[in-house]
Length: 184
Image (cartoon, rainbow, N blue to C red; front, side, top):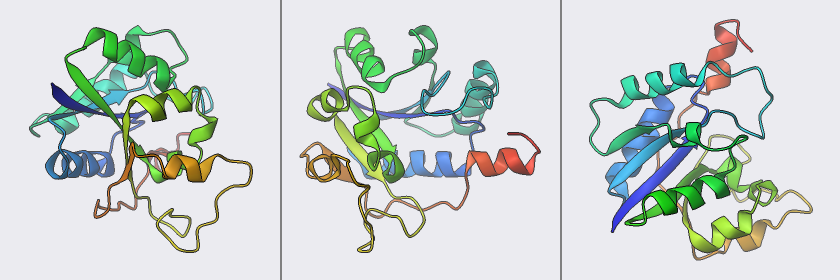
């Protein structure tokens, strides 16, 4: 059974932080492949800021073309929208029953994971690798305060959640790139 990591995102645009993290994950975990899953639309992001999905997919393909173990993936393009991770993972299991899937997410997302649709299903059925993000609000920072009203500590204590300690930190974001180009 191949172990496949799913690193989803808008990749609007893809940048060296995405690629550097993806390369680190494939080199430092037990994953056989890492699929960079280009999301056609993120239900937690405002509409109208995304470049066309085929353009974003082509950018990811170009950025990782020479890196073994990484694959640009348009699987969500063929699913009902908006794209919910639980639905994507269900459909991946149906389409690829010979694979074991692991979700890759930043600690900013694990902090709000209980807002995700069917997060309990994901947590119970899939491994989750969490990579660090820069800043004082890091989960691994002893000063971190969990948002009130969140199911935060039970999520962090799940045996399926693994923090990728030692993963590189990148001081870049797609939104900063867009803003530098005068785009929303």
